[in-house]
Image (cartoon, rainbow, N blue to C red; front, side, top):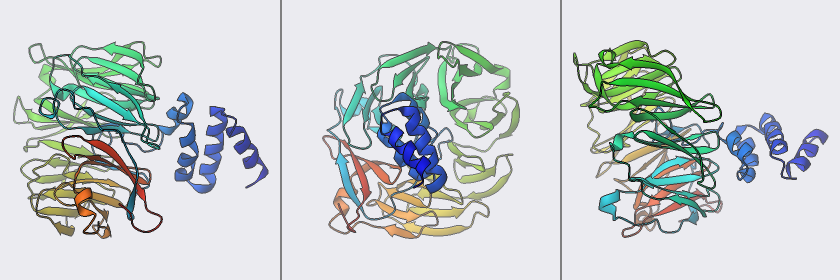
Length: 425
């Protein structure tokens, strides 16, 4: 370590967030982004550091990111795990039938947030300590318009026509905005919160891209489309680098998928094939309907695969494969050719998620870790299978794996990390 780096390290230890960020940037240039992230984590209680942490891959909203890829470019847990911590039991107020199951909402190096209908609970990802909880909202509206995402050190909570910013570490409200209609999707783009909103069905339909001011003191309309320009009823919105894709059912000439230029709202292409949901990244789009269809971002179909996916979360994108958890197993499909790379047989339908070269499979089988091409990396021992078979939700995060252990009558969050001794449960 040279003299300049030692000096930066001493200043970082004084508690100055700017000094810590400078030191982390220097560490990153020498040892890589994973080392820089590890350096910043200890300062996560400071707002400036939390904003810097947001520049690293994180599960910024439900299903990973605005493209719902269920995959992150973050260092995965890819070896035999052990339990790092277990959270306190999650609240059961309202009954599981009324509120629905707990799911991961966002997960960053600063906070892990789980939620169910209208409720959120936040935990420290290092210790598992409960940070804050937000009770059930009573605003009436379509659950399709309940969204949460991370924006500049805050959790943005959207419910029908209202967006509320909460400090990630305390849960305190720092800003609030209202808009005309429900929020189909929210995301932080270039450090600014954006909202895709759709007016109420009983009013003339209008789709808008709204942009929050830097001070979170107002919303401006970046573009809007009137009813005549919206040939479908959107059920899902997906964001890519420069593309907005709407997936829904037809209100006009059979259009089921509409791709728009993100910056202007101008139409790029449409699809008429049935689709229930999709996944989008900078390289391509996967549509799930009666079959699985992979498209380039210009709308050209590369391949189509006959597969029925009975569960939500049964589809994930990695850089070189599409991972499909169908009715009787999991299939890894090459993104460019559509050829099956590997297939894993299971007794029941599974769910999948991924990080870098690791894919996690669970639900219909005990938790397993495989490579992005389907090669086994870790499987639980027979005496571990009961425990790892209880996971309802699995979420990868920087060298760890977060589970929601659905051991009725109470659920809890469990954090796994690599077992340095070799095995662990």
